[in-house]
Length: 280
Length: 131
Image (cartoon, rainbow over all chains, first blue to last red; front, side, top):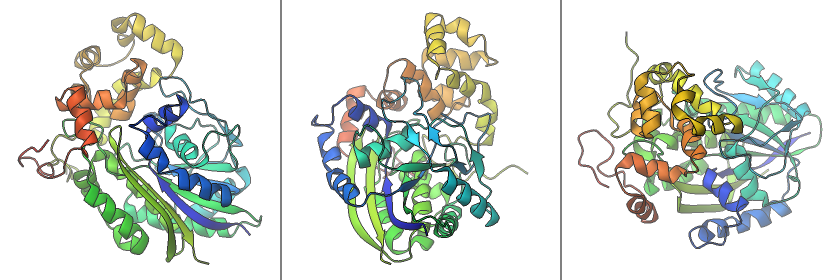
């Protein structure tokens, strides 16, 4: 049977991708950030998954205002890195896992989460930057990826609790898949940041630290946090953190914290990163 | 009955809600067109002519020509769509963010290095601004 072995969260800032692609990771501004992911790359080489179920948000790339799905699942065999306005990132094509993706889609929809099935979609920095941070710059990504975009651009995004419960449904779906697959669930985005308006540049370290603690220890309570609290305390784009709750819902109630990293700033944003393992 | 908007008292912040998305539809779709290299080339060759191909208001077109991101947001633009404009100009997200704050690039970059804008004084409209 397939099983969820670990959960990973990480920010997915586009400037991180550009820095990797341009070979500037050793520059003084960026070096502390990339040093924070050295452990993660080593851990990943020792705990390589067969599949990453990658929760992220599309940043007006695959989805314009023509179609805005709240939750979508990529069921295709491959996904091309998107041209977001400055040419596609020079990273490998993302290989999908259609059999598991279709299985999860059917199971989760039957559990009352109405996913949009997507079979043609380019993937933007929200998906490729986490892969680069965790795997470096390989010729091919070392595992397949199921892209799972969540709308956090057009208000209202799904609530924290909706995301947490969805994570549980995804866990149930993965656990009922017959093939023996090691699956990691990643929740990306965050942490505190605001990219727009006179309040741009907002960072709230106290909020972020509290979010880490409660995500691990009391996710069901954390999931009750309303949208406006994220906006007020963590900046308008801090709402991306609800996607971490999908990852958390897919994990056991009790988890072991393997690694934590926090760094300010990367461009406009506080970088947060966690690796969690199930105890069973 | 009007929809509840509990986020309206957050200072310096526009939430991209139904009303904003409705008035900003064509502005944001114009931005999406800049994801294709040939459209970027046409836009930069004659911005006014390219904008006139879109059903945007004159105010929206002028805000684009002026690269006035706060104005574009007020007129329904969303930052992730607007990112296609400054990306096609070869400018970074930090550059664009700084222009919206009234700070110089250097001041804004230094604020971020110093830990970012504090939430203290920046949670509710009418609080003292704390850069």
